[in-house]
Image (cartoon, rainbow over all chains, first blue to last red; front, side, top):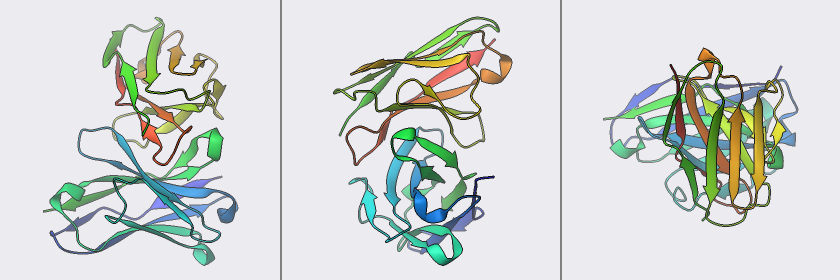
Length: 117
Length: 108
C-alpha cells in the first residue's frame, strides 16, 4: 500500500531553521517526483514545487524560490523541505504528495504543522 | 501563471441532490485539470485527473467534464460525507502548478 508519512508538528521561533520530512513506502521511490504544498491557516492550497528522487532535480514555484529548499535521500525513500530562517508567515500546514504527472497528485502525506512565533 | 476561478464560493445542498462546481481558467488548459476534495483536518484527496478520469477508489457519482478554459465537477446524489472543500488544479503550464481558491460544499 502506498503511503507518505510526514514528520510531526513543530514549534519554532523566527530566525530558526527547520527541516521536515516525508517518508514514502509501498512503491518504487524513484519512479515519481515528490511535491510540496502549503496551506496557511484557514486558506487554500499553494504549490511549492517538486523534486525528482533520481537526481534531485527541482522545479520551484517562483513565489517560493529562495525561501525554502527541497531535497531527497533516496537511500531511505525520504524527501525533505527546509528553511534556513523561519518567519511568522511560514506558519502553515505543509503537505508532501506523489506527483504522478498528468495523472494528478495521487497520494498525500498527512501534513506537518509548522508554527513560528 | 495560470489563474483558476472557482464558483460558487459556497454551496449548500441536501442529501440526494446534485452538486455542480465550476472552475474557469485564465487560459486554455486542454484537459490538464484535476479536482481534489479536502475534508476538515485531512489532506486533500485526488478525485478527478485529466478533466474527466476518476482516480482510484472514487465512486461513479463523481464526474468531471470540460476542456479549454471551463470545467465542471458534478456530484450526483449527494451524501452527508461529501461536506468538504473542493479544489481544481491546473497542470498544463507550469511551474507553477496552480489551484483554484476552492468551493465549500455544505450538506444540510
